[in-house]
Image (cartoon, rainbow, N blue to C red; front, side):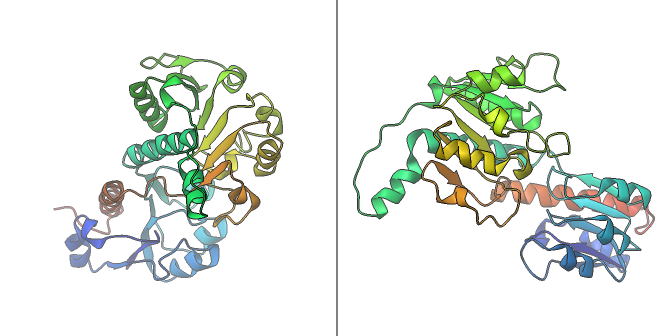
Length: 311
């Protein structure tokens, strides 16, 4: 029997109770490619006798899951589950759990970092200086801005706490939230888009949120506003965003995730766009905690299914 770790990296020192797996003769295998796996790669790794896995963002499609006949447990090392075919998993009796708490702080801090970077033109000025131009660039302060958060879950609330500490005004749209949080004002999506200086996305990706930001919604935003996405790429219609940015309909964007990754498209070439490589949870302390939580959940699931005897 085997458990397969498919995240691009994993510190086995963070694997909780690995001796229980050893005593039950369950092998722990890591990702041999050390990068995000393709559908065919993960399918190959889940053949044989894999009973459980710690998953990254690789596509766990119906084909992949049906090709893993002994798989009983998927633990997502992270919060999002949009890479997993949950319907098929349910049909096949595969348990799916995630680690929603650990990534929140790292994603929230990267969000704030992107906001400050774009308001103070940090990366743009760095590029200019490297090209030989010493030109101090006038920016603006985060504390003077009205920030609109689309989504007020764990990460959205943490982002709002950080923003309020800077002195920013915060409003949020979240149809699942009915009561106010802290000093955050709840509003509808149209109001948020039309009145915010910064719009930041903090919702999961689904069929309902696919291209939530599109040509129509981008037209509601102020010409001097910017959009931040450290959530999921499919939330934004990238073609519509490209048009809005090149037509000066909005002032800028900061993007950590894209519809197709690794991203090689035209948005990365624009001077008013800052890009990072889907690294929201990539803080050392966060990765350690995510890996500990994932292995803890994996061991608990293996006990539930009887692969590890209860003491």
